[in-house]
Amino acid sequence: MVCDITIVNDYDLTAGTTSSTVTTKACRGSAGAPPTLTCEDLTVTYPTLTTSATQCNGSGNGAGANVICNVNIVNNITGPFTATAATVNQCFESGTGGGTQPTVDCDPLQNTNLATATIVQCNQSGNGGGGTDRVNCTVGASTETSALPVTVNQCVGSAGGGGATVDCSTRLTNNVIPAALISTPVPSATAAPIVKAAPELAETGFSSAPILISTASVLLLGGLVVLIVLRRQTRRLARQD
Image 1 (spheres, one colour):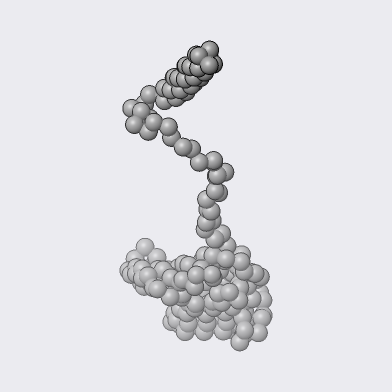
Image 2 (cartoon, rainbow, N blue to C red; image 1 turned 180 degrees about the vertical axis):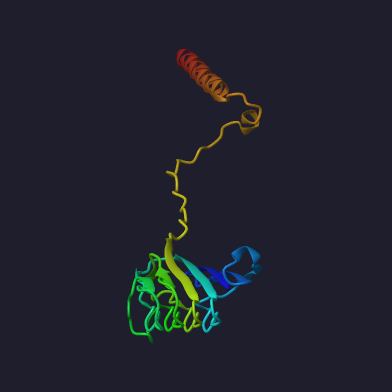
């Protein structure tokens, strides 16, 4: 028996949005002959988080059976959170029944409280006697967080027949995804209002400045002429008097 579970959780702490994708693979066939296994693959996407994985418990208890099961969980969490090393309870009361020592090769051999451990696997397994290292289980670099607690329980009470073996592994990863940066437009300096002169010319692309200067000159000359005329008339009236 070969079984794999891969879970990818996406969780935005601020927005409260959740989703998960679960991929499973189950293979069965004759012991000791992996090429003859018949496998089934299934991928399902959920709008909620998937917070536990349970498989291969009480399995492969016939003589010479092989139980090979793996769990890989990846939590992509948007927002701040604290992660610590995952607690483990595995490979206890396993590898009994005789055989060449060591019959158990597990890493880490950690005995966290069974009721509170995040990862539980390979307990009471491989107890039918047989060869060395028949219980070979590992927990890769794994973390846990209260922001998204998940549990794994697999390969417990398995491979109990004579000569049976159990090889199981778990990895639990919590990734921090930075919140999307929201860009805020920076207002530009407020320019003084511009009053357009001769807008009909501005639309044609010609500058109205020369026209304004010419107009001002004409008005100035006109004013001077009026002053000269008025002065001459004043002089005539004075002579007549």
